[in-house]
Image (cartoon, rainbow, N blue to C red; front, side, top):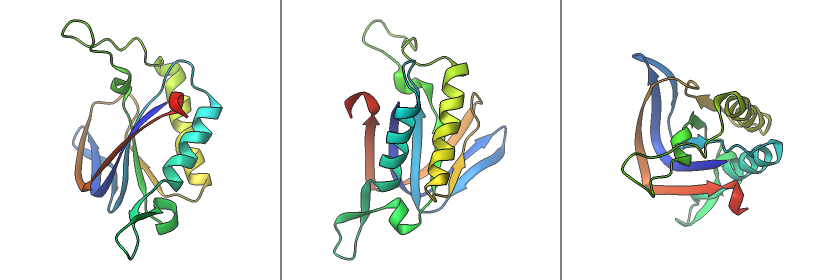
Length: 148
């Protein structure tokens, strides 16, 4: 699994003009699923997203997690995180999991985050989405379960 997470002041996702997910301050997470991903990757990623200390404490140090602050997450599926643009001019997405594998793992991640007590908003899997955000910091990180 790969995730690009951004600390945001606010973020929202629309599908066909309808807002399907929105948060105020919190984390926007773009999530890609690889073909070899499973439950172990879901658990690791959920814990990391909930507990990663990227919010500032009273001293201005990144020392607090979204979970500690009770901040929400907006999780948006994005298979293009597995895009490979090394050759040619059009990226290949063959390294991404097929939708029938990716969607259940995406939903498991959302469920696991909720089990951890997180408020989670989502996009819509396999939909054409428009994402709006105001990055805070900016703080943007890449997580990859292959590097855990």
